[in-house]
Image 1 (cartoon, rainbow, N blue to C red):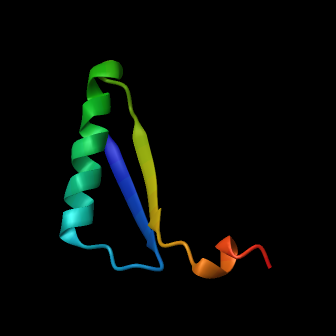
Image 2: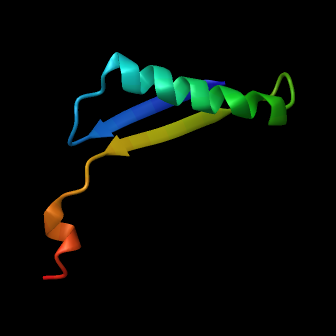
Length: 54
């Protein structure tokens, strides 16, 4: 399985990458061998502006 990780508004650290790869690796048991699969993950930080309602 190929994993694409995109970070928006934060630095993509090795710890974040490792965590995401471990979680996505659990999906391997549901994907048949020989199947080409791609997991796209976007990690970001929400701002307070969007939560204010203004």
